[in-house]
Image 1: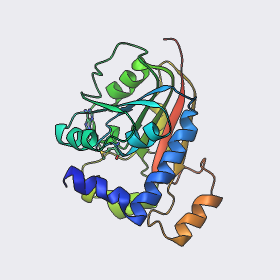
Image 2 (image 1 turned 180 degrees about the vertical axis):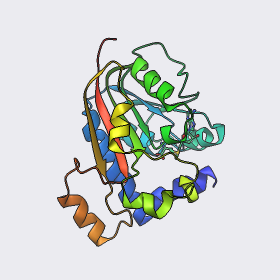
Image 3 (image 1 turned 90 degrees about the horizontal axis):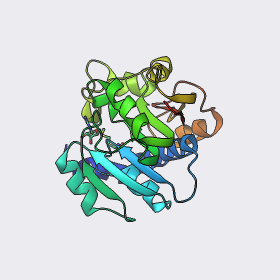
Length: 215
Ligand SMILES: C[S@@+](CC[C@H](N)C(=O)[O-])C[C@H]1O[C@@H](n2cnc3c(N)ncnc32)[C@H](O)[C@@H]1O
């Protein structure tokens, strides 16, 4: 899949609904304050990087794939900057950003524990890490037997596994929340999304978030 094809999905009715639903979950989990700096690890084509930047945050997107970054740079929307780098060795001093987010990226990173530790190292205040939920209907549709489409090769987590990634790291108030319970994005999906609580561990996107503490 090319970066343009990947990003075009976010402009389909289903992709736009999923993107915005996930953005709201991430934003609420981060509880950002006006003007804070934010790092987006594994930013891909920059969908969430742009979205946070449009809301007024000073955002840096980082990805390992130069083709994804080329697309993101040429579609930058609100002054966000992009850098190439590896989530397992982030090229920033400790506490460089107020906030850090990562969406559906660490599920493609070998040694995800290193990446989680790096995210906490460079963050001053809060973090939110979005993973794919193995207890979701989406997993049954797209995740089994090695996965299909954009999910091929992804690792899927349970909420317990997601919370366990923070064990032994400088974090407190760790919470797991989910969204996108029915991923077809139809009328029923939109209704269900309004009534089910985010604490229900069945949504396709699993977000583990918390406060970074002094190590
Ligand atoms: C499924 S895409 C998600 C992109 C974007 N966060 C989104 O939600 O649209 C996964 C991204 O993780 C990036 N990635 C994979 N391994 C990485 C690593 N070790 N360091 C940084 N980025 C990585 C890939 O290049 C890809 O852009």
